[in-house]
Length: 143
Image 1 (cartoon, rainbow, N blue to C red):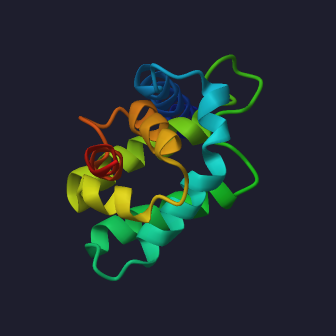
Image 2: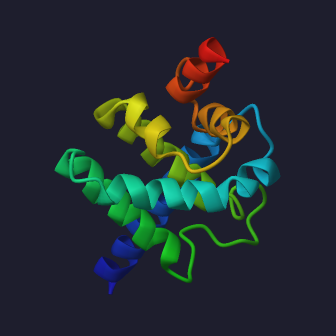
């Protein structure tokens, strides 16, 4: 019986540590409501990147796992928890995007972005990506 209690305690501790990581890693510079408006274009971006055979396998696997997580009807953090509860999907998507940009490159994200330049800039800020997106910088120089 004490082994079960220890296991449950360890799982609760792990879950609390994960919630703390999500709180610390949450996007800054754009309200969560604005980040949620980017969701349709971001989902299309994730799908396009995951289907791009030129991307490294590790990138595609991460993206497919993220898409599966987003499709699951329950959340890692329940919605009744303030701040993080309703934003865990956004935070996790941002963390995965950061890792994808590090591995696949910013150009791949810019090429596959289906939305506007303003939306791409907002995604860049929310995900905490460095610099300016290539598509926006290229259009600004040519326009």
